[in-house]
Amino acid sequence: MTTAITRDDVLHLAQLSSLQLSEEEITSLEQDLGNILGYVEQLSELDTTGVEPTYQVTDLENVMREDVVQTAAVDREALLALAPDQEKQQIKVPKVL
Amino acid sequence: MTTTISEYRGMSAVENVTKALAAAKAADEYHAMLSLSETRALERATKVDNGEITGRLAGVPFVAKDNFLTFGGTTTAASKFLEHFEAPLQATAIEKLEAEGAICIGKTNLDAFAHGGSTENSAFGVTHNSADETRVAGGSSGGSAVATALGFVPFAIGTDTGGSIRQPASFNGVIGVKPTYGTVSRFGVVAMASSTDTIGCFATTAEDAELVMDIMAGRDTNDMTTLPDFFAPVEVKANQKIGIIKEFMTEDVDMDVRARVTAYIDNLKAAGHTVEEVSLPILQYALAMYYIIVPAEISSNLARYDGIRYGARAASNDLTETYGMSRDQGFMAENKRRIMIGSYVLSSGYFDAYYLQAQKARTLLINAFNELFASYDVLIGPVSPTPAFKIGENTADPVKMYLADVMTVPASLAGLPAISVPAGVTSDNLPVGVQLIGQRRSDAQLLALAKSLEEQA
Image 1 (cartoon, each protein chain N blue to C red):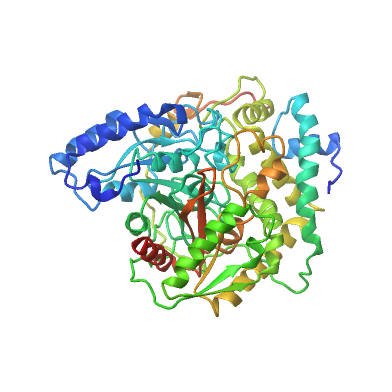
Image 2 (image 1 turned 90 degrees about the vertical axis):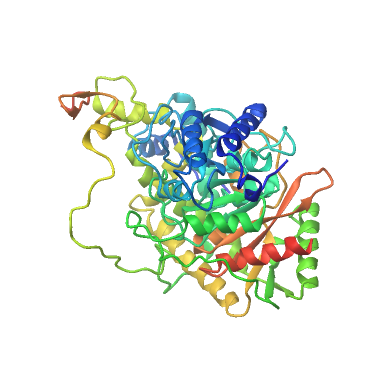
């Protein structure tokens, strides 16, 4: 089973996903995404009327901790050193506006 | 030649580490390792030999899947995004093993960001199966499985989100443990799907796996989903009631795989356990649930890779283009497919039909397991419908690749412990694993059962 995924669908999903795809990728994704969605669509056959969804499987509820500042595992310098570009103790990014 | 932890005890740690590093280098053609942390490993070994570091794993070398943050080298998640990333902290699992004197000698290959079931999706090349170099290692923790099977180290650690420890363990003939969800802290491990990500291990005996899990398990304030430490080695329970999952033993499953599982079942019967067939019809929908829920969580978790705060950044003068190009260059094709499927199933208009429906179906799956565990101690079946497939055989068809996960995803969605135990080889000498699935927190009992059959053999 295949779900029809158009070129526009792929471009829209790429935009939602912040992915700038090549022309070649767009073409293969039309088919791949259609096949994957076609497979998972069989789930619609299942009657789930009145069933509560499960979002986590820990059996834990509302795990609390004391409201005190915890010492960070990593300091500011070590984190800044990871950034591809930095200046004056701040992460530098391309022009936003 | 595989090794066990006891072979390393009471020996010189420097010699242990030197030997492990040499073994890893000598088997370079398998491409199990992405990096070796020689300097740090030898420094720690010297401290063990000086008596500065002690513990239950003092001087025992191990390897970690390259999605665990570690000191002493890079943590790449087998991706271009993190190719040069040096972690500023270590994963809790690594810290706990180190606190017992274990020495990480290097990092193993995986499908990039752990997306895959063959270790063919690595940005740095394919890992080869330990029994047949023309076949896949399995995945996503393929490198850790091969490193254990080839005996570089007595144990390795990995992550299992939908089968990523169990399936490569079965393809390489070693034990693979996927614990109850929440057993081991996920802190410092590259996140994939937070509601099913688990940390576990590979070993060559159930006893070694038991020790490693015992050390790694426990509550961590850095991971609020961790359970209070429940893991403690136990004696095997006698006269267990074991259910063979009918849906996993159909004619679609490789004949040799079924034969090996049946032989293991015969051994269980000989050991005094009762084994009978059980049915879980909802299993036919588990893979569809998984490939909705997991991509949804992936699309959210991988939003953090934007080329701004860490990782590779593509050169551009425009911010939006920087995000888009960095993500296009940093991710592999399978990463992109999963992110986009996730974006699709979470989109308004599709959310109820896909994501919500899958989470409701997940409840039905959990209920079905619970009903069986009211009458059965353990469920049994194969780990994978086939032995290791050929390199390149499934890469052109993502859905075909996903179908290899059909037997491992159910325990993941339900948060159940499941282990892969070696059950011999096929007529082509390819390893086959049998899967034991238990109720939540019955991890130690599953290992005790596997151990009792090793002793019988």
